[in-house]
Amino acid sequence: MSRVLYKFIAGSGCGTQNDGIVTSPGIHLAMPSSPTVTLTFGPDEIALHVPADQAPWPLEDARRWLDAQFVARECEPLRASGKVLTADKLITIAEAIGPREFTHDAALGRDFALAATAALARPQVHIDVGARTLSY
Image 1 (tube, helix red, strand yellow):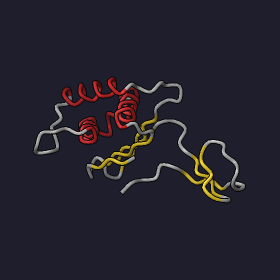
Image 2: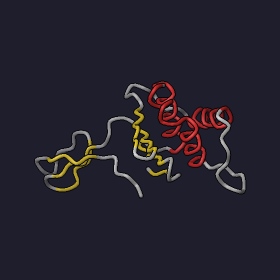
Image 3: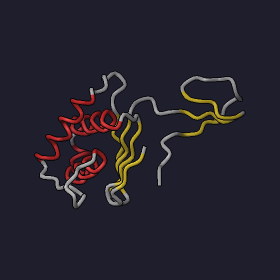
Image 4: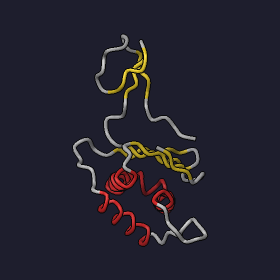
């Protein structure tokens, strides 16, 4: 199940487009201002925001960072075939890092968000670690 990372704002009607998309008269869909990765660890949810002035990472830099983290944190493939998909890699790395390290190391959180959004080419990503699901 995908979580909606947008918020509805009462507006004056169609035709106004400030920071989002006008969907119908009186409802304005505001999009988050910067790339965000939301992690769910059971009842706890952590939002990792990429600073607005931060340039996105190139795909190869994101893959390289994820590969290094996967090896350094001794992550294991989720699939019996041994194939490691990008989504699987993000889930297992998030699980290995855990909520405590994400909340105490802002640079790690920023780098994870930069790598995740670049690797998936999506500005908003949700990872439910316990359920082992990823959505955007």
